[in-house]
Length: 67
Image 1 (tube, rainbow, N blue to C red):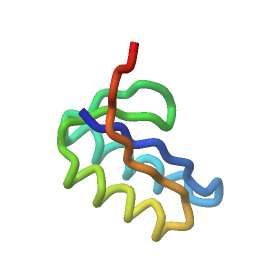
Image 2 (image 1 turned 180 degrees about the vertical axis):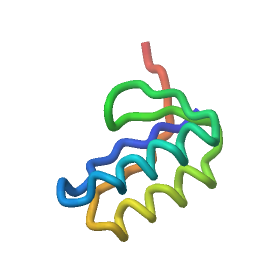
Image 3 (image 1 turned 180 degrees about the horizontal axis):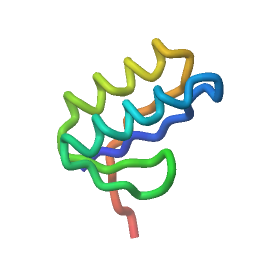
Image 4 (image 1 turned 45 degrees about the vertical axis):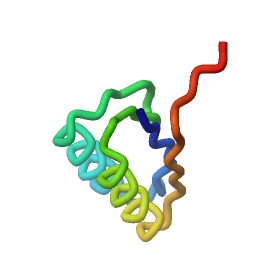
């Protein structure tokens, strides 16, 4: 399982709608406002690149439970 953590620029509210729609389309699970879980690493990475190209910040993490 992988986690996408991101922050979108405030100047583009419709961009956030687009990102959330893309995440829902791949069946990602919303953990909190800007944190989503999914098994689809390839698409999460594509979305992260899109966010970064749109002046946002994004990281894809691998979920690992330690304890």
